[in-house]
Length: 342
Ligand code: PHE
View 1 (tube, rainbow, N blue to C red):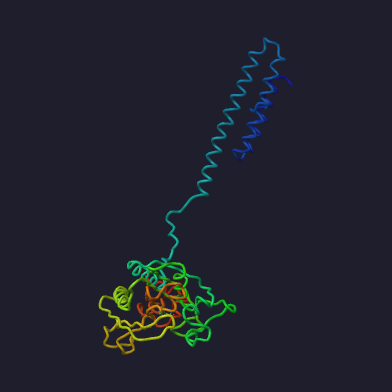
View 2 (cartoon, rainbow, N blue to C red):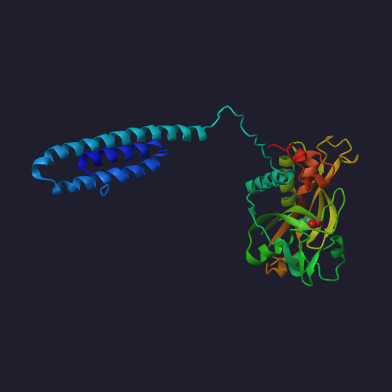
């Protein structure tokens, strides 16, 4: 084959290779095949050495023309293909900005959380620090150290879930009082929110519920301090006109013990369904820390005194939001929950 024929032949090969090229990737292979360093045109150029010197200029011209022709052809083809590919990509990735957005329903805080946050902020404002004790307790912290030894009748006040001989689900956040007093010297001023467990189940009781405990121990703390603090708390959570009253009660770990009522914020004390006609609503238990409890924690009861209080968070939520069945607070029904927006 003479050179002219070879050139013709290469041109034909290029035409036919290009005829069915579909992607810029396969075009790249064609480029390598003809224009690459070891491609067909380069190897023709290398053959120049074997050609007599006088024929070289004209042959060089021919080969250069061939290279240029090939380059232009393939480049044009490439930009055409790239454009098609880009258009295809745009079409595939097209976003319809007019499609309506997916609806994300707003979340809402659970009423328990709302009340807990409110209580924490009220008491934090009075200088209380948060302490969270364990939900699994041993008998000592939940009962014995709270002046409630094994055969004490007050144990019957709370039906306890036992996990083992000495291990139980705490029945009261009061267990945390002992953990605090064992580890900290007075002055003590802590607030302890958390879940507690009792084998009890009806419209106003649940086997798992939440309490908020408070404990203050220092020199010269009296029942008046407790009463003053409770007045302040009741006004903040139930309204400015609400009054408190203390009724004698019994808890083994406080002496004296009291039950705290607030005047009915629904009827202003006249008597209504919420306060069952009495004008008063019971909201929490409290008292002066029993000296035996202080002693047991290594705190001298002749030097220090303290008060403690404990309330049910669900109970406060039910009162404040007018919820008549405690189960609503545990069912997680969004139709109920979404009514409680901050
Ligand atoms: N722990 C008591 C209860 O669960 C409440 C309480 C706390 C009473 C602190 C007095 C002092 O019923």
